[in-house]
Amino acid sequence: MLSHKRILVTGGAGFIGSHLCEKLLDQGHEVLCLDNFFTGSRVNVTSLMSNPMFELMRHDVTFPIYVEVDEIYNLACPASPVHYQHDPVQTTKTSVHGAINVLGLAKRLNAKVFQASTSEVYGDPTMHPQKEDYWGNVNPIGLRSCYDEGKRCAETLFFDYQRQHGLEIKVARIFNTYGPHMHPNDGRVVSNFIMQALRGDPITIYGEGQQTRSFCYVDDLVNAFIRFMDTDKDFTGPMNLGNPNEFTIRQLAELIIEMTNSTSQLVFQPLPQDDPQQRQPDISLAKEKINWQPETQLQEGLAKTIAYFQGVIAQS
Ligand code: NAD
Ligand code: UDP
Image (cartoon, rainbow, N blue to C red; front, top):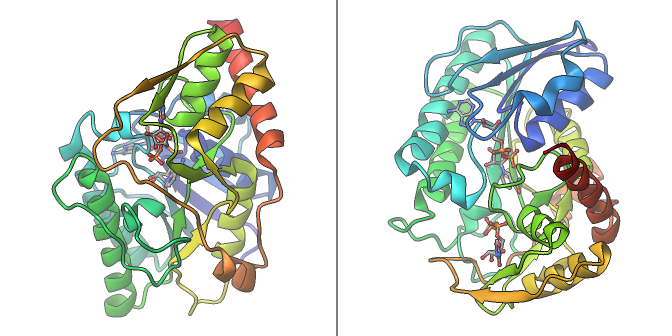
């Protein structure tokens, strides 16, 4: 096994991607970060730019990619409902054409390839907590379908490339993740609530706030990606990665108000279409295969994220 690798991270200027680039550089690898800056930003990787092992390339994954690398992490895709619903056709193209281009590249290079899939492949789940063998409850024609079905189709492509061409694949189903470098206006619940609380604006709870999510801190997630990439060739996943501690959205709002000493009030707005009622990963497979479980408790991760957004507000 190569100890020093050239690694491509698509979507590397995004929230999770920028943390992954940093971690891979810390491990002594060369990192090629590819991004079209739709939701990501150069600011997320500014601190990496002076590292000679880091290279930033503007490119859209829906077009073929010609580079030479040893490993690929495919993260390119908007992840927040507001952003992926902004141009839903482009979202499906990014997942599907992006997967085809990334897999074609991996095939030519015989490179191991990781796919950032999502808990959204389970839709509004009727099995709780969700295990990898659950096939999901997904609306194929709704507002979230461009993302959910795009990611499902990408999983299909990954497994067909593995069966048909013997490609080494690693498919991770990521559950809600948060931390520094989230886009302050991306509409996801953690960034929304923290920004609202810090500005003293109303905290927008969709529905009654009884829906649940399980929040994973980004450092824990990125550690899992790297461990997963190092597993035996025959272990492909799909594997759930997330924090199994489940909270209602109302609990999250109350915790953020308390931690920021905010004067913000809760306001209740309509629940978006097909908003999953509950979500919690079963991570027994990750425990068994990569000896991993999240170490960061919600309060600890939120404290770091709040500090990050305080910095963003101070600079704006
Ligand atoms: P993000 O929006 O911050 O990052 C996505 C990155 O991909 C951005 O830098 C964006 O500019 C880039 N991108 C989008 N379309 C592209 C294209 N066509 N070509 C090249 N680059 C493109 O989101 P994130 O939270 O960092 O998510 C990263 C990956 O993890 C995504 O694939 C997402 O679906 C997956 N995921 C994230 C979560 C989460 O909670 N954050 C949960 C499940 C899955
Ligand atoms: N949500 C909310 N207020 C907000 C943003 C989101 O109540 O300002 C809710 C949303 O309806 C969902 C949950 O928080 O039930 C998580 O939303 P997010 O967009 O972060 O991710 P999802 O898990 O839905 O993809």
